[in-house]
Amino acid sequence: MSQEPILVTQGLTRRFGGLVAVNGVDFDVRPGEIHAILGPNGAGKSTLINLLSGEIPPSEGQVLFHGKPIQGKSVRQIARMGIGRSHQKTNIFPRLNCLQNCELAARIHMGGVFGSWRSRQRAREVGERALEVLETCHLVHRAYTPAADMSYGEQRQLQIAMVLATAPTLMLLDEPMAGMGREETVQVTELLESLTDRYTLVLIEHDMDSVFRLADRITVMVDGCVLESGPTEQIRASEKVRDVYLGRHHEEATA
Ligand SMILES: Nc1ncnc2c1ncn2[C@@H]1O[C@H](COP(=O)(O)OP(=O)(O)O)[C@@H](O)[C@H]1O
Ligand SMILES: [Mg+2]
Image (cartoon, rainbow, N blue to C red; front, side, top):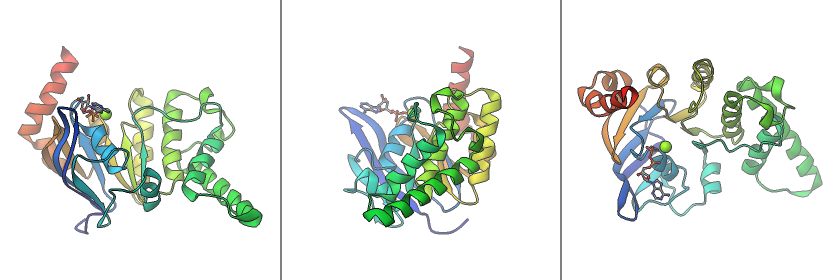
């Protein structure tokens, strides 16, 4: 995987008042990789994702996607460039069924209506796309089930389907396994694994087993800064990471 990165950040910084949530981060994503971001709570992981998706502007530095700065573009324009994201909290429409949720996501991506023939054609495309992503996410049998009636794990899977419906080339997933039981975590890990031949993924995740299984590279953040970034094996073996992150994690877990 020595190709040019598809996304690069240069000195990316975001302040909230006096707090530096993301501090001079140089980061890159290579085509086809799963790049995991690890770090304790408050490290700046979600803020980094919010900067990559254009949801918040940086205080300093920039994000280049395929060599072009995303600064000044709307979230929707950035989504159309090919960056799709999911949020840490579930944001599905509970009363709509799975198919409708995915159609909505696909429609937002495909844009407005152009006359009746085009709009019929478009509705068909939207429906096909929605069904396709439900298939990918193993939710076809739930197509007509209201999202509110599904298990938490299925709702998180639906969220991934909705990101896919926007036809991204780069997916940013913020803790897709958060709050899941063991079995559901394994299920979603397998789903993400099955996407790797078609998508590039930036993944924030606390579940170490999943991260070590999925990631090609890992960036570890602490206090807004990059502590270390490299191939999964390097991070796994890193004393620095073990001391600062895994150590603290372990203390929290056993406190
Ligand atoms: N919108 C915001 N306003 C003020 N502070 C924020 C905002 N978003 C995040 N922060 C702060 O920035 C730091 C990093 O938060 P976040 O990126 O959510 O961390 P992580 O996702 O790694 O847990 C935290 O101290 C958090 O309280
Ligand atoms: Mg977060």
